[in-house]
Amino acid sequence: MLVNGVPLVVDRLIQAIEHDGLFTEGLYRKSAATSKVREVKALIEEDCAAVQYAELPVHVLTTLLKAFLRELPEPLLTYDAYDPLLHASHLPDVWEQQEAAYKIISNLPELNLKLTSRLFFHLAKVAHLEQHNRMNCNSLAIVFSPCIIRCNRSLPVPESLSDVSKQTLIIERAISKRLEDYRDTLSRIERVDSEAASTAAKLHHLRESKKAAQRQSSNPVAGSNVKPDPRMALHEYNLEER
Image 1 (cartoon, rainbow, N blue to C red):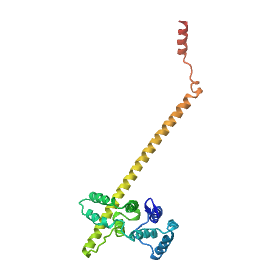
Image 2 (image 1 turned 135 degrees about the horizontal axis):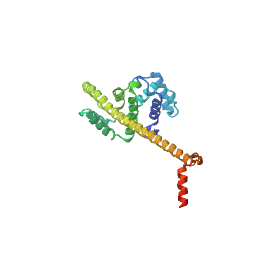
Image 3 (image 1 turned 120 degrees about the horizontal axis):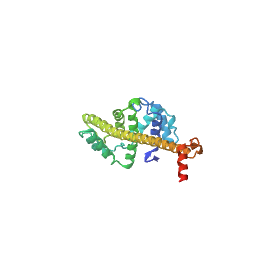
Image 4 (image 1 turned 90 degrees about the horizontal axis):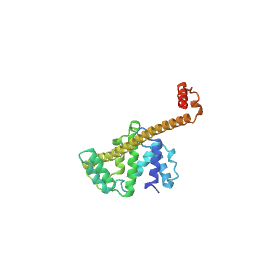
């Protein structure tokens, strides 16, 4: 079952984590008890829509999300994307690495692309609160790269170890790019809110000024306390004499 192109279980896990867990220190670094995870996995396999995700401990939720990604038949970032992504890690600067990574990701199969987009958006939210949860882009990349990117061929140990660092780097770049986009969006929202508040204050002032003017113009007593000027009376008398 899919929700906006994302497996229902992933959608529910991420929602529950974001609702209660974003401020949890070591959010994805710490794992839950194997027995509890196994128990909940059995419930999910029986009926994933019936599970009360919001009632589960946050580390059970995060462990389940990592397990789901790790146990996919083919990695989320497909075997075909593996070599291009690692090649992107060799580019000379961070911006080029980020742009190359997202160009490769944009060519993933549709379901992989939607799930990758949802996952990285979630991880950007986590990294945005790193001062609370101690999970920055690098920490998240270390945790998630083994879950979402791997090679389908045997490699010599030295090359395999070298690839691990490249995998981590390119996943870090992808998360950091999504974090930049997320913070830009928040900044734009704050500007719009500020401008809206300023406009609302100006409109309120104009409305109050208009009401005050209407009250003054409609009050017949307003001019009754003004004493007649004798010079005006004399001026009117002279005009009548003429």
